Image (cartoon, rainbow, N blue to C red; front, side, top):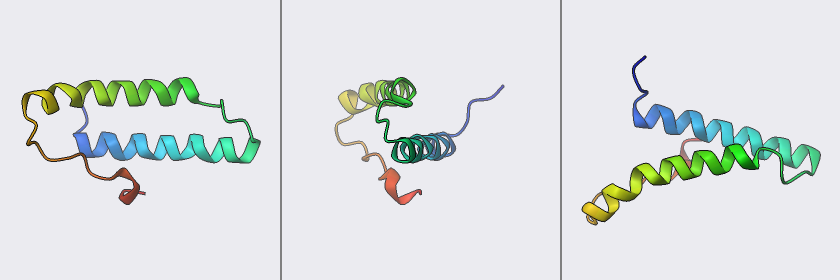
Length: 68
C-alpha cells in the first residue's frame, strides 16, 4: 500500500480531529479521543521536526484551519 500524499493525509487527519472536537462538545467530555489526538500530533510533528532543524528556511506548515 502506497503512503498518502502529505496534503491528503493532513486533510483526513484534520477531519478526524474535527470529529473528535464535535464529540467532545456534544458530550461535554474533554477527554474523549485525547489519546488519538496526541498520537496524531506527535507523529506529524516528529515528521516535520527534522526538516525544520535541517532547513530552518523551509516553508511553514499550511494553516489546517483553512482546510476545513
